[in-house]
Image 1: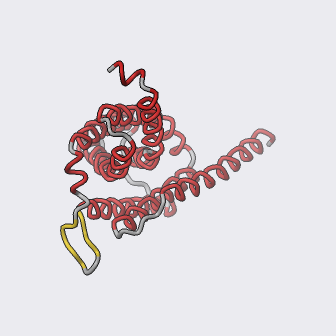
Image 2: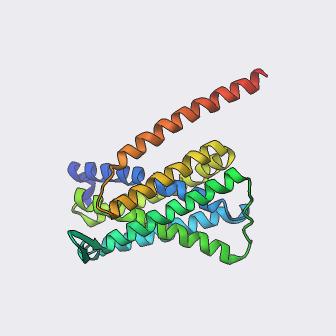
Image 3: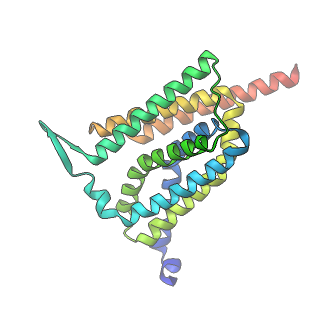
Length: 238
């Protein structure tokens, strides 16, 4: 344990991996913020906390099942020169779900329809399951990245725990901000659509660097932030 705390290489690896896990969790955080809004206000915080807690347990479990994760890339079916693996299936289904979910949410916003979600416990269970399923999809790439960067399992687990804790802290303000600004929510939904397309492309063995998506959405968010600042100034001057 002392070696982990005093070894500069291990510390550097942990910090790098933790930051990378946080960055890779941005899309998960956006989805978490949007899907939890379907619940009544009094249930949203608990749904986010339970969903992230279960997601943490699942991610740590996947780290202990590294052999199984690596085996998911083995082709289970061949279509000519294309080898379909379980990883492709998971990414393809997850990407298709994100595209469907993002499209339906955008339709709801643009058409002005209100989706009334029941206060029944089943509604919360549905949201938590969606959070867990999408976290599984998002976790595959982040865990593969972790394995490629760090060889020590405790370091990987610690980085994942830190990333989930940051998401847990950031979930409330991010959710409130997205919910209070419809234009920002539209950008977030567009980002989820882009991520969904990227996941489907990965399933088809056509990799789109995630950095391109992050740069695009960061620029869009910057422009929107400028618009919000200008809008606030106009309201104050008016």
